Structure formats: structure tokens, C-alpha cells
Length: 186
Length: 452
Image (cartoon, rainbow over all chains, first blue to last red; front, top):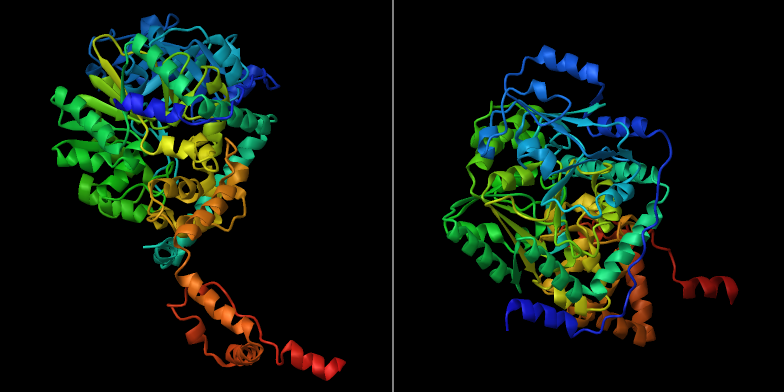
């Protein structure tokens, strides 16, 4: 008997009392979505910027290796998306369009179409996500309602920069992945 | 070594023990604060518990549904009855890829299966990429906490370790500096690895996808750069529907560290073009636990670690004192199911205060199961030590004369025994306990004087 059969038949040999699958109510929060989203991102150690604030930061930083897949900032790209993700090793900035954000925790949904390469938002040194301010959801429940039928091979709720507190619980931003997250609300 | 013996070892460094206690309580406090911001928090716990109960009642069906959908999406599904089979399957995939260096993100399951030593024995270099796990791996230690693997170490120790392993400046204890050194070291490994291994937080039957959550982004750094992704998943990690993730992702990080969500929550449904995703569904004692009615719902655990952070025993004895892959209250009800003899002292490593049960996001009745395991332990091995003192007591209570004499002996002994004997290191009972002041006379003597 294969292990598959062994495991399944071991489970099926048990008399297990039926338990109904509960329905999930449509919980929602209260308050201004933009305000709550902004607060969530900042508590996750990211930063929410306006278009002009972002442009100011970007032009004063002098980055030379930039990939932009954002329709809003395509002119900022200095590199095109490579075929091989290993070419992202020295990438300074990636600019992507997010699908929607969740106010309660700052999570932003991205799929293969927005990412180009799945490694992109992790491997880049700085990450910028552009988000339509009218595309904010209240909680994760509304977030999952939006992507109930989505079929992307990879999807990601991204809520902040790479961070760790593994050394004596001291929070450090920029563990293995992106050292910063800037969300530009347009 | 039993839990009390290991705990005594941990408590020798009283300053560090105090820091450990206070730091974990701080995390517990963060969890309280963030959960209070969610008015429906208790409803979410109830829902999560209900969803997991439904999963356990229909596990075989959900596993088949998951397999069917994952296969349809191009994921290669494997089944492993035990840890040996799991390890062998991983090695076979590595050998097919001619891979001798692999990066691995946090996976309690691979710890449970002792995958690292197995792969190393077969010539594979395994790099744990979670910072805390890399630190304990450098020290040849297991993680001491499932969410905070290096919580038993102070930055001075990590600084020394990194000086030796990563050639950081001697004496530089700045966490940002040390983390940056680890970043450079680990990114080199990510960019070189052909295969990446991850754990799984949730597998979704409806879609055949699985979800991996990290704050460091290390799981994703590994898998998106590698050619092949191997995901190792306990069979109890299934959820029925994608929307169930809404409930579980709201609970997981808030319960674990008091954050509203982990920064990276990746949903893997099918491999990138030209790449491979393998998932290994592992039993390793889970179907046996499912068969134990009293202990079944320990399988609802989502490995958030909240029960550890709140536990007065865990905080004051450290993760290693449990000598079990999953320490703390939840480990103390999971591990006896795997090896009752080895883990027989764990169900006693609790005050039964019930705080673990109160914070558990999936409402596992942990303290009640600890009590139940005590009954199981005493059934199988309670005869010896306690049996002897009970027999002695039985003799004393049977004879009125023996009772009188022993009573007077004890009253005098309590007065005159030197502390060095009562608090002798061999007398574990005397630790953290004070003896009562002994009355001058027995009740019988008092009654004769005052009432007759």
C-alpha cells in the first residue's frame, strides 16, 4: 500500500463526528480607509507618500538601477525586466502597481501580472508600490472576496519591508529582502 | 533529562532567565493590545476553531481535493507516512537536480523530521535562512521557540558567534549591524541555491494553493531564485476555502507577535514557467493523534506560539527545557503522542492556569489536555516514586500509634531541620517552596487541653 493510501485509509477508518463548516460573516471596521491604511503601513515600518512626495524622494536619491512596471511611473525605469531573476541582485528600486490594499493591516495584493518576476519585490533594495486610493478594502474578508475567483499562479499580500527582531527582539528593517517599502497613493 | 532538571539548568543564569521571562511577557502584552483593536476577535477565534474542527472531521476528503487541484495546477504532490519517508523524498528531489546546497525557510515540520542532519549526512549543505534559525544553526542548536528561534540568546553571544562565523567586528553588538552582516551572507546563499525548501502555513483544498508567511521575506527570496521549490506540509494544515484565509491571517500574526499581519504572505498556486513546485504531505504521527479523541483537537494548532509567550512555566524555563521540537504548552500535548516515555515530564510542566487556552487563536483546550496527558502518564509509569510514598502513607494512616508518632516527629522536624537539608539540591520539592510554621501541638493534644 502506498503512503498515500495508508494515510487516507488510516483517517477513513476513524469514526469522526461530523462538524459543519461555519459561514464567515462580512466583518468590517469603521473609520476612513485611507487614514487607517496609512497608519497600518507605518506601523509595519513602511511609508505612505503622495505622488509629489514620492517624486521628490526619488529625484533626490540618484538611483541608477530602477525597474518600473508601474503604468504611472514607467518613465523612471533605467532597466527593463530581465529574463533571469538572478540579474536582480544589485537592483536598487522596483516600482510596481498594487491591485488593492487592506486598511486594517496595510496588506497589498499583487499577482504575477503586476510582478513580472516573482523575485522582484523581495530581491530589490527598495520597493515602491503604487496604489489607487479608491482601491482600499476594509478587512482581509473583503480582500479575499475580491480575489475569490482569481487564478494567478502566484499571489502575495505584502504589508511592509523585510524586517526581523531575531536579535534580542530589537526590530531591524531590511533583513533578507527589500530594505524599505514606499506606497504611493494616487 | 526531565523538564525540571533542564529548567534548573536554564535558571542558573538568573539575569538571563529574568530577561527571557519579561521579553516573552512583552510579546504576550502586544498580542493583547492588538487583539483588543478587533471587536470581533472572539468571534474570529470561534470561527477558526469551527473551520479547523470541520477540517479534522473531513480530513481525507480535503486532502484528496487539495491533491487534485494542486496537481491540476502543475504542482507535484508527494505523500510521506513518516519522517524517514519525508526526508528520503526531499533527498531524491535534490539528487534529481544534482543539488548539494539548499536554502530552507522556517519549517517546524522539517525540525520534527530532523531533515537537516539527514541531508548533511548525505552530503547536502543546508542553510536555514530565517535569521533566528541561522543563528541557532551556527550553534548546532534547535530553535528554542517556534516563532522566535533565538529568544534564548543575548546579543553579546550573537555578536561573538558572528565574529567567528561571519567575521564581524569583535565586540560590535548592534543588532542592525549584525543583521546587515547576516543579510549579505544569506543573500549570497539565495542567489546560489538551485533548490529552496519551505514550510507551509496553510494549504487550500478548494484551489490547491498553499500559503507561506514570513516577515523577513526569506522564504520568497529562496524559492523565486531557485529552480525547484519543495514545500513540506503536515496533513493538518489544510483549510477548505480560500476565504478561510481571511480568518486565519487576521489571527496568526496578531496572536504570534502582536503585528496586524506578517509582511509577506505568499500564495503559491502553480510554478513559474520552466520551474517546479513539489509539496510533501506528511503524516508522522498525525493520524495517530487524530485517532485519540481527547487529544484530537491539538491538531488545530497553527503554530503561532502565543501559548508559549503566555505560559509562566515556559517563560521561566526556556524552550530547551522541553527537549521537544515544539516546546511550551502546545508541545507538551503534541509530543507525548509521538513518544510518551521520552516526553513524560512535559504534561507536568504546567500550572494548569489555563492561560494557554485563553490565548489560543483556534481555541485548543490546551490545559485540559495537559491534565488528560497526566492521567495517561500516571497510568503507564506512576507506580514507582509516588507509589512508594503512598504505600508509606498507607501504613501510617492504618495504625493510630504510627500516626501519632509520625505527627509528633514531623512537628519537631519542621522546627529543627536545618534549611540546608530541606533546601538540599536533591530535594527538588524544596525549590521555590517554603515550609509552613509547624504547630506546637497536635489537634488531639489541643482538644484534650481545651475541650475535655
